[in-house]
Length: 317
Image 1 (tube, rainbow, N blue to C red):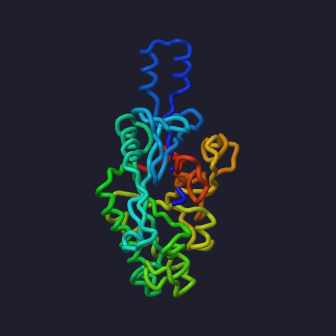
Image 2: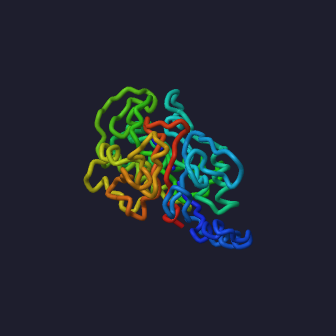
């Protein structure tokens, strides 16, 4: 996955009290009143840094710090499952999940009121890798629903605290289907052999709609999408079927390998930019813009892993 964050902030009054030599009792009283979305050093109010997918180093002790960045460890998003794995493919069947990071994120969230805890995403297959492909929206919706059912089954074995489940919609460029079946149809899910190099937008959209409908009607969770503007447009175009105005979003553009350029709010380099770009008709001003994988994914590697910016203040109830 091209791949997450959320911030506990000690209030300015607390910092001033501590710097002025206030008593430990006064410091403790102010700490107790700080909100979970208060700002950690180097980030904006309401935001916190987190990670996703493969393990990243989180060292020390609880409450766990955001090692190599600043502030507290704000959350972890792991892969609940993968379409290629569910189909028994011998390639592309990875499972990017880090149990230790998930436990650390949940510890901070549950015991220290920091961040979001643990969330999950499903690495989605488009209609072109549906084993029952028949060029209809009805079948595409069933394929989306089947993947949602697998997502919920996998989640039953994970302590998930975050209310949004992410549909990972991307073009990974790896076998068995470099486009994950969104823009081409394959002779079978794992064959890697194309039989059609075009998928109607309506059929692509039916897969996502089927996924979202099943997940929200069979669980308490909300649906979000992990993607970026260019990839989204290459799959869904720019017309009405590309719009997702009431769907939560997690973007991965732009990215940087330079951790010293970590974002403040929705912009890199402490807020100087460039800034996060969302998709499907939404911008960072939308209440549905929740996360931004700003380093580590999509070939933009840093030494440690995938890092994310999480808007804790917008976490849905």
